[in-house]
Image (cartoon, rainbow, N blue to C red):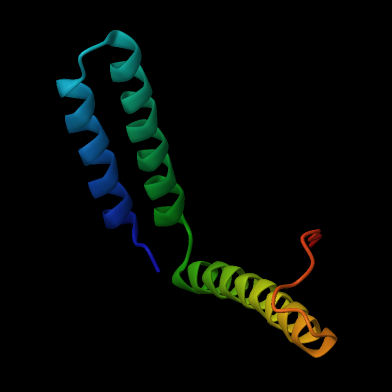
Length: 91
């Protein structure tokens, strides 16, 4: 689970890249990314540890459900005699 300090390190990287940017557009875009990461760190700082764990587990469970659906789709394709599931996928 990423920590606010890790978010701040990412922001620092973007800030350094912005200082080295060749164009004003690149510099502004990188500064905006740095600002967004700092805001994320601030939001995470205000959350309790319990809230962060709950959000992390919810995201992991969602990803697990997606992989379960893909596995079942692949199993049905194998049973049907094709190597790959149908090209049309809808989640």
